[in-house]
Length: 125
View (cartoon, rainbow, N blue to C red):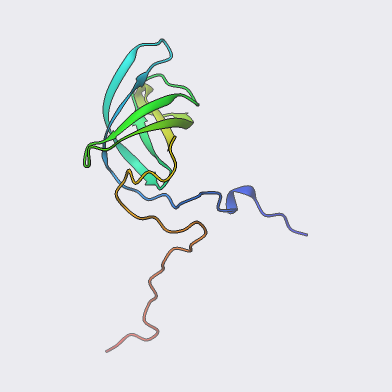
């Protein structure tokens, strides 16, 4: 019996899409110093996003994220954190309130297979 590797199973609630949205992120560092950083998203989903922060933060911490394109604000929680270059952190966050239309776009339903373009079966001359 073969075993399916855990990373092969789609665990996301909505698909992640590479979108570079301008964001303002506010919160407190681990030293309790207030920060306000202008950054961009690396990717987004219907439940959160991924960005780079130049601040010391921790998993579980709450942030206020503002979408500069729409002006909409949302309270978010850090769910993943890894070191990036130059002392910056790559931060994954999720919205505290569900069903926030923060990105002003629609996402495919979980489990939807990506569309693939098919090549013509015969080249036309």
